[in-house]
Length: 474
Image (tube, rainbow, N blue to C red; front, side, top):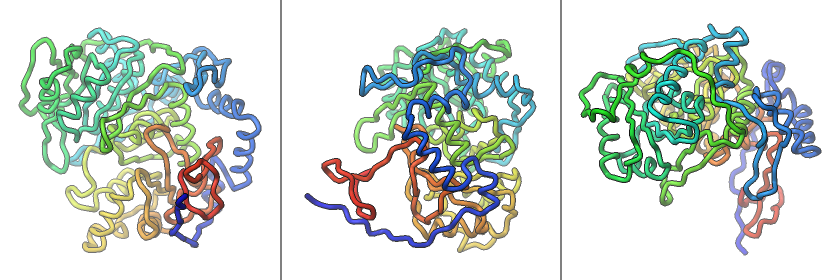
């Protein structure tokens, strides 16, 4: 039997700063070990406690983990809740309606602030519009949108009425969009006339029309279009409807549809790079609990934070750490329409300074690209910007090499912001392995240890644990 050799050795480690540990949800390795031990002692009780502390339930659950149909495990299956209520209403009801939920910066630099009260109203209006168009609990809605407030509104509105959304990345082709519409069985499509990226208008509505024309989409009765640019689009009377016209006619309140914890919140398709795209279904209770809990543990996120995840809502990162995680804990977040190099490669650093971002979560590919541009042009180097608001950095989507980690730590975090290297995937819905900023020693290029409650092992090809230091399969 072959063995997998571990060739990466990165001896340098950074201990958490005392100021970070004092602020942290998990402060020190003793606190981390205590949570790990709690989960090992009473696995069901551990998750029950966090589900009750993190979410508000319409009907409290009495069953934590139902293993009767293994491997189809069910969590909290006799409890009911609503994701939109947990992300919006409860903050307004707690007196935080005027707290800013979203700071949206458009491609051209235009900034819009949306409070929790206003976001709730917009979600309710669109939820009512969907109901008027016949969308109901259990129906599937495909969302093919740019990074926008409207994209988040569409996702939350589906959740509010119990419809299952499936977001398709705005850069995908008509064929890719068609495959997902057909496979998920969508009855409605939410899209945009055009999206703006890097100063250029990209024709989303035209691509959506092409996708529907390919065939197999006869179930789609409504194509709801967000008017972003006012660009010319083809129009199919009776099927195509403007989002703003629909919502203007609806009330600003909408009673949530209370659903079971195992009710499908969304279906998100893998990229299809290794074959036919595969739909991953996430349930309402388990997904939302973990999105909120990892916001608290991995990012130490507080209501006072300005959180910025640079991902797209078309990927799992944009679901967990844009649409649902930040809103579930009542934080303020930045949502960005554009690209990091327009109008110049200092855009990220300028936005961090402008919006006083405290937690910045991005991809190693973006970091490596910006390193090259910054080192070749001092005018866009992060050292030229006021990044003093930052207290934590994160990376997602791929491994980060030690050199890029160190540059990010030194030049963006000024050697005091922990760099949280997160490992997870579409199927998990949230972080699985990542350092806890106030507890775990940081090792450049390593995502370090599993989160409390996550049992991870490195095994050989037969499934046997391998010795520490030997490579294997996670």
